[in-house]
Image 1: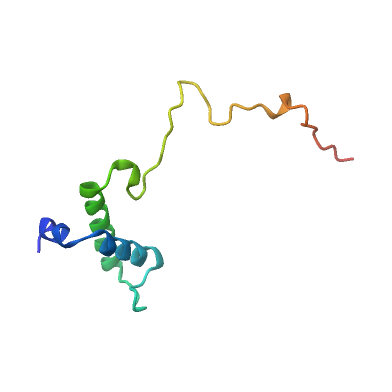
Image 2: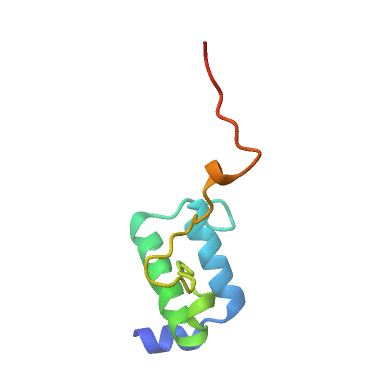
Length: 90
């Protein structure tokens, strides 16, 4: 069976089961996945997602946001906050 034939057989329910198997390391019947099975499942899930899902819904997607150049994630300065009071240890 080649990759195209395999992808034609997969549907969202099967892909969800494969993802769960990879996440917990065992099949629904409790049998542990071998390293080879885990790799094949991961490759199958990724290949199916690339073909059937938009990028934002795929496994491993990281939303990078729309920050401007030189804009930082935490642009809030806590020292400018009126409630900011450093703790002093004596």
